Amino acid sequence: MTLKDVVLAESNEPLQVHSSGGLETAIWFKTHPVDRTFCYRVVQFQLVTDSRDQGSTRHTEEASWSWFEILVLADSAEEGERTTDAGGQAAWRSHYNNLGGGHYTRHFGKIFDRRHQLFTEIKLGDVIAVRICAGQYGWKNDARSGRLIARYLDQHVFFPHPWSLSPLSTSGDDKEQTGVYSVTSSDSCLVRAPRPGIGTLGRINSRIWFTTPPLDDQIIEKLNEVTLVTNAHSRYPTRQTDRMTLLMQAVRSLEGYQSPSLPQEIAAEMGIWTWFDLVILPNAESITPKKKNGRLLEWKSHAIPIGTGDGSLQVGQKFGRDHELISSLETGDVIGVRVCAQFAGWENHAHSGRLSLSLTPEAPPRSPLPQGERWDHVEKGLHQLGEVVDNLLKRAGAGNKRPAFYIERDQLISPLRADEVGTFDASKRPLRLLSLDGGGVRGISALCILKEIWEDVTERE
Image (tube, rainbow, N blue to C red; front, side):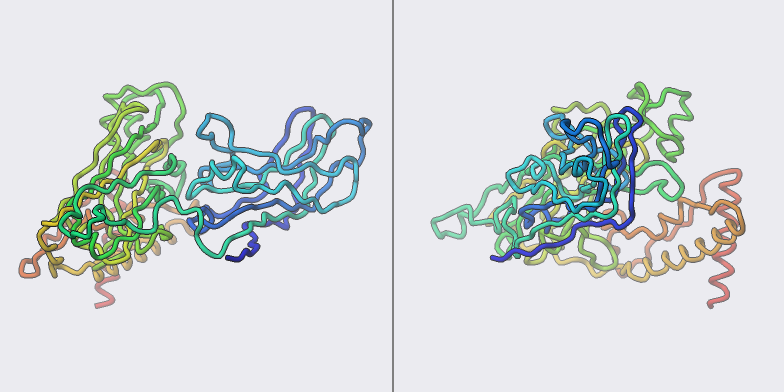
């Protein structure tokens, strides 16, 4: 087993903060969302900076008021550290600038290793950020360049689950291999929907929470049922205003949130926009579901009911032997649990989860997947329509106008889900329905786009 050093993130763009009496801070740079390789292989990391303070101080016997911190953010859009599982702030001091030096010095910060609390707080999909700080009147933090260096092992060591599902029976009798495997989450998970803004309307934020180990032939052939049970609650937009505005804010994400309470009966009318998916992944390191027949292998397990408390359990859909989830499994696949939130203001707080896999030696053979409608060409056609809409929007936003946006464009280019488009009998023609929704300007814009599409298709043919 060997070690190698990897630069997680770096910045060569200078940044300064000056204190006028209170604490002044600024985020300098961030990592990409941490992946499974980071979670399972990193043993330590360290911040290195070329930086200085203001260069003089009348109180050299005092501590420096110019320093750097390491933060854990819930996602790359956040600017403040998230709350730890114990209720504190996920921020830790790395190092101070050399006191009163006045010239740039290379500082090697604290080495954070696996014994430090920071590693217990980092979750899959989190972002690590570097923050520069200055406190007390007249103090300055002048950061010229910095990098965050991690030390990796060459193989997974800190894996949360066993590498395989061992037989339930040790007698060697294959018929006794029956019962339930229970795979439990190792930590909590928080997913916030994208903040409101042009280009984020209707977008879904999601994160793989935990997975099964790789499934072998014996497990797949005996797998009879899969069920997810979660302990979670959701937060939803809470702006007190008139009924229609509340509904529009939630459905179209036009405004922010974080205001006093929203009645549950109105929240229920807005729909439920926090839920859990079960997805098939090619391995435990992957975060992208497998694709088959033009569709992503992902299925909704259950949503979090409005008004659910912190201690409530939610039992998801039971995926039986005849369900496509089980029929689609191949040797080496893993089943992942994904936490999802959509529309500004919605948050999915997943505290704990348990994925139950029921096995039986008498399970009938799995039904082969039907050779029905192929969705590859459908997906290609939708992307072509998306390109037409893009061209229309570019023309609409030409010159000094603000770029045009149309939420249905994102829906056109979104990957097809297995639970949204099923398989059809090849001998029967599937229903193809065009629905235009919206009055006023929205109705006119839909007709204009349809006209552009028709003209473009006609020219191609």
